[in-house]
Image 1: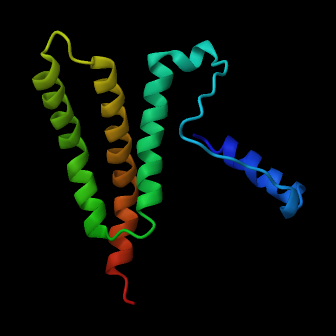
Image 2: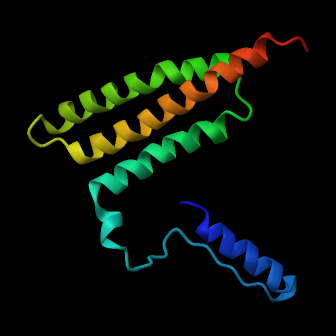
Length: 130
């Protein structure tokens, strides 16, 4: 999530000779591991989803245009509203997954903030002569 696994894999590849490397990946593999109690709180999960939204824009925006950024900026709040409406239609107001709705809203808020932060830079860059 924050690159720990990737850092471990990069280190393994630099330390271990190529002929001796043995890395396997399977979507069917289940791994049980200890998770700190603070990482199971709604506050932590919302922060992680918000940061995920920020990262989503950072990764996607490397090749994006100003128009694409503005489009993403305008879509983020509506994506949250659409998700909320879909949850209510599928499960009803009483049985909707409000925790997941909050996490989705945090993710879309991260997108909204990241695009908002980068928009002035994009607009300046788009006005500069090539």
